[in-house]
Length: 125
Length: 253
Image (cartoon, rainbow over all chains, first blue to last red; front, side, top):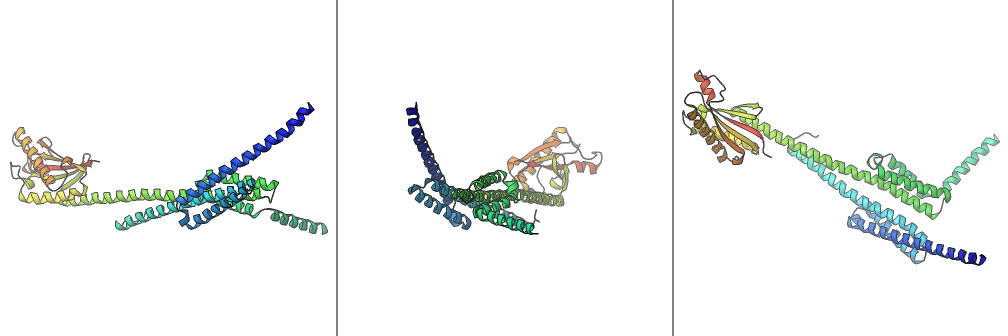
């Protein structure tokens, strides 16, 4: 019985360590993919040409790069944590790019209404 | 006195200690959430604001356990971005609302333009003929004696000019249905009056088509002597009954 206990405890520790290691790897992989795709989405939406969006996009890229370096040095927990920042910055860059598009569309629509009112000499609504 | 001074010093120390241990990221996150929750995001983006609240709560819990740990700083950083995202989402929705409003304004203006055109048409027609609004539509009444010689369905030269002007006014709204009705007085046989009023209605229809009004939107009907508007006993009454009416109906679209 004691012999069995002696074997089970180190085995449990080993399995637990493997499990934690695997889950860290998985989180790292998922966060890297998520940040990379958010950065790509922001770029496709033209974030590089929108001042505030490009700022957050740049931060996200630097954080992703930093996380890769940490992961390469086996600092996976810190890398995952840094990827949270990269993901948040990239997602903000995506939203800011959308906002820029919407603002321009709204501006155009309002200008068209004003022009239509002016052309037909109507008072504003 | 000494006790009070001691308490004040202790409080100040505690306050300064608290400030020193709260990471800047968490302070920024709290400010960002406070700003977002007091702005348009509260009404326009409640779901995103809720996410921001949860992110801040996560950061606060982490700060309670390990105030200056990298995890607390990172969670606070994410919480700040989350609050910013709620604000940007609200801004996006606000811009979309402006686009929708502009669309409604454009429709209203276009409606006003069409209304003005129709009003312009009505005014122009009123100068050329008797015009009245009935249930069946706008009715333009032209005296038969002005348009045709007696017992004849050929337009008088002066009538052509008058019809040209009426056609020009009607062309302002050529997507409307027109019904041209020929009416006769009670003199003569029913068959003769019916045939004459039908021919007259068709002549007027053809003239309007020749001026550019869409043929598919005009019908011609001979009513004969069935619908008098005046007493056929007098010459004046009969003259009033000999007429052509153009009924401007609803839009065909």
